[in-house]
Image (cartoon, rainbow, N blue to C red; front, side, top):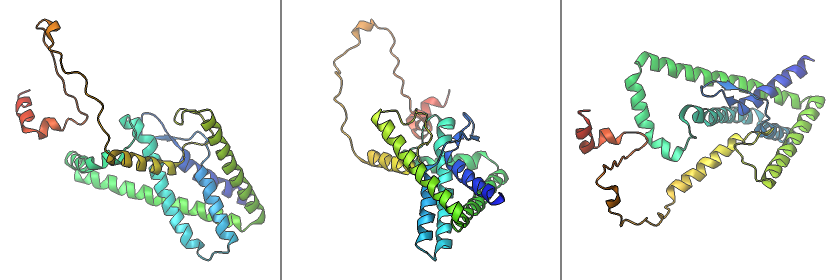
Length: 251
């Protein structure tokens, strides 16, 4: 019984680590019990390596642990950014502002607090790696037991089939990916595909739409005031453009 309990705990932890949701609008997390397709893929990869009699399981497990930690961090960014910033992350456009953000943080936060935050992040990532490694080792140990191996194999195959059925179902119904309620959330690995598409779109020049007519002379306003307001997201132009900064400085 203890062996089955530890196996279940390892599976639940690995599943929750890639399917958690944001507790809006905070950086906190919650879990709704969804199922990770990446976990099924992990079990199938370990199973294939075991059947092949691979002698490099330890090295593979190390790489899988590191990859899993990266996926957890990616999942956290995907579900937290919309809650905190109101939009998804677009690495192609957002990475150029990282130096400005870093400068803002280092100038507004005391050095001791910044060092404490950095140590906290390293500690959390290190602890996450240790727990993930223990969970993956428990899965590997389960493959050595005939009963546990059969259960793991059957569950992984059923999950993979159910995921494929869900995707075909929603594609057939043309359901919105983001607004649907499903057993399986969007795979974390899909976020990398989406970022690659955003980068390609950002680097691909697109023609501007035809210009509207510029023949109006505003005569029908009968000398009423007209306000032309320019708004841009970061406000940096108000400080970096000397002609703007000079006029805005008094106010």
